[in-house]
Length: 492
Ligand SMILES: C[S@@+](CC[C@H](N)C(=O)[O-])C[C@H]1O[C@@H](n2cnc3c(N)ncnc32)[C@H](O)[C@@H]1O
Image (tube, rainbow, N blue to C red; front, side, top):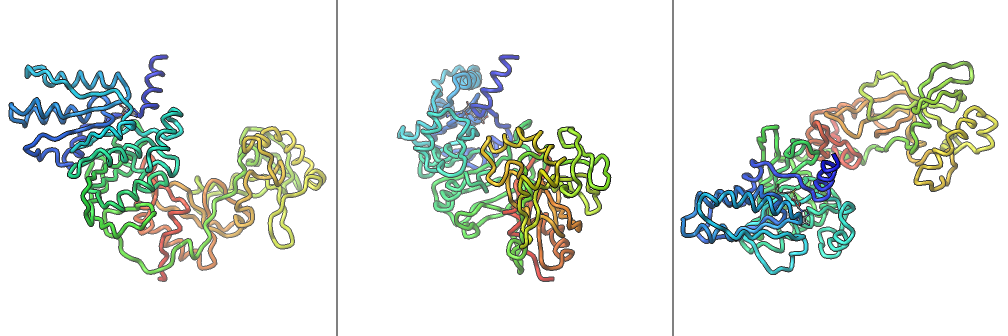
């Protein structure tokens, strides 16, 4: 068990998730490897593992090289890995290939940190691989500092080792060389990927981009992958394709660099998007995130029984208490809401009252104690848990206030509620004006809600989110505020 744990830890720390053969072949095809040039080419996998790329490369060379050139060609294959065991397995797998041919090849396999080889002066015609995906905060401190100092692609967002491998490859490629990597697709839209996107935008050197969206390339992981093939030669366009089926069928088209807006995420679609006349949702509505207590188990209740002024209620931790009815508000969980008919089953302890201007203000402690004694005594019982919020930082409003003060005023009244993740558009009109929202978003609109709702729940929204939304397991798409704001609402 202990050794299993150790190997799991190592797998995670070194980003050891190995590549399936069909992906290796796809990358090699699009890098032009199978159209071998007569002259031997230099080949590198900078994070070669046990040789998932290098073994099929060597196999192909063995089958397709003139006998007198084979040793020279095989001698130009190079593999690096930080893990000695990976290099050992890689050597064994490569040796196995040539054993029957009576050849002995001095494989150029090196145990090293690839990211420190950048100034080695070596250049390669073909660089391929599946570089490690390790968030910067999970790297050893020395390596983390080194990457942040030396790799300009790694200055923005919470960066990842695979981003540095792209920069490394851009340095090590020959002028006519090609690089093909499989990596997380997150760089297409994330802050972390901004500098990498900008590198491709400036150099216009992409050849192929394949987005696998939510189709799983690596069994048993939740990585959403992309294949990126690039060189050094400038082009006006590149081929973009999106995986459409679990047996890896693709739809694609040429994307012109003029379609990419500088410094913006790449929300690329395999079909050309029609320009639609209308207004951005974000310009005609207010989209907000629900209320945030930072201690939901202590603020959310189901009601067991009620009398005139008091209710007997159970909080999410199973604690049963009496509370004053007037301090509870009905609340809807945005991420669970399915239809406008869903009954309200939850109530939130809402220690606020409206002032003369209609704004929600915290009820002062002495007033809370005198007007809501049952509630005040409950708050005192759970105070230690409330005080632990925000790492123990005192709440500037009151110790019993919500952890955040967003949406206190706006979340009541008629609104459209939606979940941050869904399989298909599900925007629900909620007409109970007394109810507030948590764990989801809501939209406030001055126009006709029903007309708006028709467009929000349309196929056009599903198509929009298919491109603009993040991928989650099981085909779920992210419906986040930033993406939804850009949806165009038409006049009719
Ligand atoms: C995702 S695996 C890919 C292995 C192989 N290329 C494949 O496609 O199956 C990443 C590999 O990177 C190696 N690795 C992690 N950090 C590295 C570094 N800084 N330099 C070189 N190799 C590294 C790991 O040991 C692991 O074998």
